[in-house]
Image (tube, rainbow, N blue to C red; front, side, top):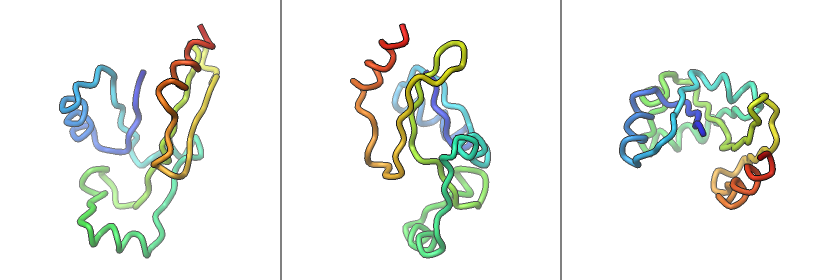
Length: 109
């Protein structure tokens, strides 16, 4: 298992340590991987102002000021590189249940 985040490595490492995660978190500079998967989205100007009002600092954490993020996604990939299951949703609050991920993994074994 691996996670991919637009955050700079030093911040991902802090999260990994804080939550005792046992998998790697890779950095996706400029959301290039997310863009390749069609998951990158840009904040509209009005939301940028709202987030700035809350003190959001994408440039600090992500290393650029593009105001882009990836949609949360989860892929189950066979060792040969074939994607066997994919889940993503523009609404970041809707994510696949762990049970679904386990079932998807069982289906490729």
